[in-house]
Image 1: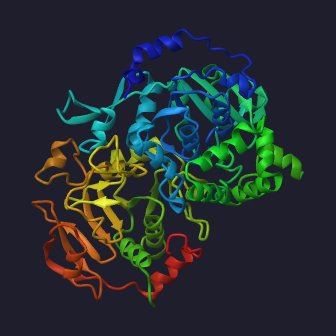
Image 2: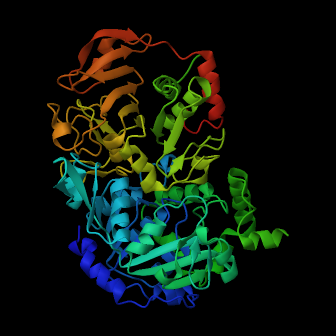
Image 3: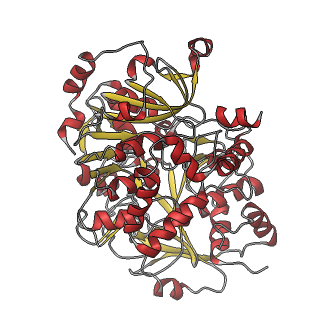
Length: 331
Length: 254
């Protein structure tokens, strides 16, 4: 663990010293991601293949950033891309692979077993509490988890004696990321963000981070935000840049809007099974470095596939059919 | 009705769950077992899923492959988020945690992190804890559900990802783990428990047609015997039919 990650005093000063604007946040992916520096501690919202900010991750890859630390609770294909591109040297996570049907990630194995990437493992709750401590501005939170296991020595978890009862508690250190990448269901142009379904840890990550970059499925009016302020989970003054990116998590899922594309995962892992880690390089050429815009990227999947995944999401959640762009196309 | 190993595991695991309780269940066989229990004998059982989901009703044929996707939260009653789902367990609201495991030792400790002696240069990197460490630390009781293979049941795990009784001798309590611990290990050969004093694994029950010696032969450390070794009831036709209806695609039932 890097001590800068839990330096709550420096983290507080960074927020104090930063513009906290209620003004316009809308910009392009290119402009948003220009705020990411080599060596940054980058936290990615969503979880596994749910609400991954794929458009932002793709843009970070296109900017050819290096020596990043990725922190994410359950790490999926986006982590494989960052490893294979040579963008990350360290990953802070509780778990990494895609999911049971696709087995243990061969990319995880390749880069971690060779020592090219250090994987610092924390328990799911402990990492969640690291973001929450960051969101609260405190250096650590007491907890009853992760004690006694060999995970303690991996990240350097310390214990603290409860001053009231004398019991031993885990002192889970805060994690203050340099940059948060998040994808949300809707936001107004001032960056007030609303999320449907699974909240994951995005609201904590947004408050813990110094710089917050957000993509959204839909831009709504300020009036819409003010009509449902209880739905806002990230206030505009926390957000540095906002980009409209329909299907911004695809081929991962976005709750109620589109289901993850299992077929795509199967094609991707079949290529890795056949050709090893080089297959990820080919994938990045085709899906990341090749298509210049997010819409060009989506065109590789095709409207029919996107509509199919939107229909499946609606069946599962009873939500209205797909992102606004799909609803408009069907109307 | 004949049945395969995954079906046997799911049915026996389901029987461990009582009505009016809560269970933290991972995807795969544990989730199927919890869903079967709820449909068959525990209608007031609540499932908690680590993706931040309380009270889902799994849609047959649309089984989730991860704990964080829409399928896992079908018709849920609450989506509190991941951190808060675990905090319900830390508060004591979760009775049973269902877990699998790559390697398990004689004290019930589980390794799902690395194979080999050096964490930073592993022979094999496994996916990691996910929520398993938290389930093992925070639930009132943990039940491990796993195929019984000698390569899984080893005297000492390379790495303790999820703590059970650590090294016996009150070491769990001494580490600050005040609550819970592994009570049973449901396998394809029988049900294992732990000696109340030494916390070493012991045979509690064998499945029909399986001898205690078969369990020993498939275990990489000496197993103790419970005072009385039971024989489990084989899965009934009713249990198998209900279970198969949950996974018509045979995604997890093989």
